[in-house]
Image (cartoon, rainbow, N blue to C red; front, side, top):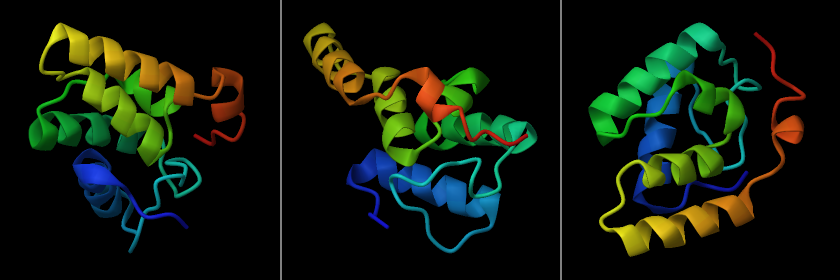
Length: 108
């Protein structure tokens, strides 16, 4: 277990805890392994939009199923300027696993 780091990860962890009805969520925990599925995923993207003012498509839940990955994707939705967007995109790309590795254990 590694706790969420930073404001975005902490906000996401709170949303996950509420939707998945779990006590704690680590930054490397997998949404689907914690009991998430596509219907909860819809509620998740709606909650992210309401709480964080960030719009993520439902596909992001499948592509970025950990708090760390999802936080990086959410940060890209609301950067402050073009230079910040470029830096965040590079950090995001460098930290991502190939999609085939992140979806192998998806249970819906």
